[in-house]
Amino acid sequence: MVNAAQMTSETLAYATLGGLAIALLISIYTDIRYRLIFNKITIAIGAPLFWLASGGFTLTDISLHLLTAAITFFVFAIAFHLGAMGGGDVKLFAALALWFHWVEVIRLILYASIIGAAVTIIFLAIHTWKRREGRARIPYGVAIALSGLWIIGERIFNHFT
Image (cartoon, helix red, strand yellow):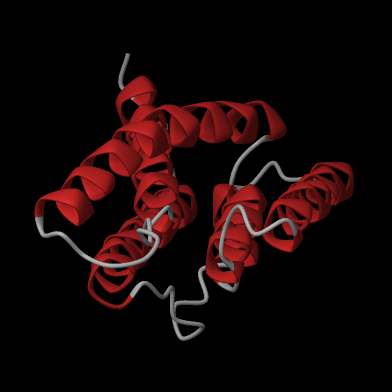
């Protein structure tokens, strides 16, 4: 039997995932519109609340999430340094790594790569079609956020199977 505390905790866990989904949708909009992922959308802050509400997160689990986020940040900071992606994209990847298990982070990166290729093709086509000067600016945060939404969807739908 489920007690009231467990139900409240589960509700809070889903509410934090819902907040994450909203933040990712806002990130998609702002990245397309302004080519920026605003610092105001600090989705990393919600991760500890999610850990708490989800229950079962040990100090070891939390340490693994922090390590995964640090490694993710480091790897994509190199990509930023090489000019391959923006700083907001790096922060978004690292922040999402706080929310997901390291295996999910690997899937997140894989999904973002596949979706990112599609986003790149679409925005290059638009750039060419509109005959814009200079290099096309690709909103790669769109691919990262869509991948995060995909992982959230997997969590929710797999919960019911």
